[in-house]
Amino acid sequence: MTTEIKEKKENSNIVFIGEKPFMNYVTGVVMQFTTQNLAEVIVKARGKFISRAVDVVEVATKRFLDDTVEVVKEGIKIGSEDFTNKEGKQVRVSFIEISLRKKK
Amino acid sequence: MTTEIKEKKENSNIVFIGEKPFMNYVTGVVMQFTTQNLAEVIVKARGKFISRAVDVVEVATKRFLDDTVEVVKEGIKIGSEDFTNKEGKQVRVSFIEISLRKKK
Image 1 (cartoon, each protein chain N blue to C red):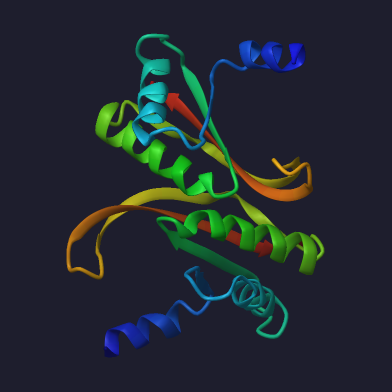
Image 2: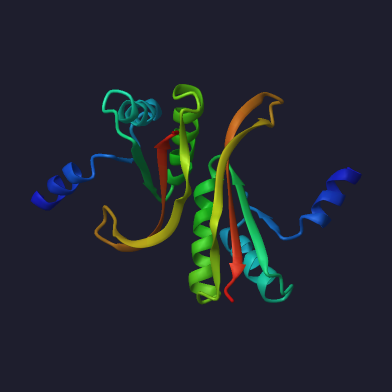
């Protein structure tokens, strides 16, 4: 539990995409760049939420941030990792990480 | 119709991910590299099939092609495009393109 909280604090520029309402994530990404004034934000998702992560990035950058933020060159990474699901079963799941950065 | 067929022939190294059984796409990608002996294959998907495209790439490269094929550096592209859905309505949909290449 402690590690989890610590990790969250250290990785505060990471937005994990899950099953909350879509606009929560869009607002989250937008606010990291505006209110929090961060230069770089990483959008992460696993499994079925990968599609959603791409949607969030598209809407946040094109509709809300008006192309002042872009996907970093070589900034999209995919892979798979072992993951323990709700039933406690070990499964292999794909992930995506999309790095966004303020345009110079 | 003619244009569509022509495009298909010219873009034969592209695998479009849709709602067919998952393994069809995995086999499709694997065979492009083995039977067809292509050096590069592009996996494309739109909307909810984006997650599936990542799964297909992971399974094809890691489980079947045994890491002889890799994602090209800067080879993952995301974006959005206008798309006319089944109801004839114009909608904006996200897409992903993942380029795979035989390792040297």
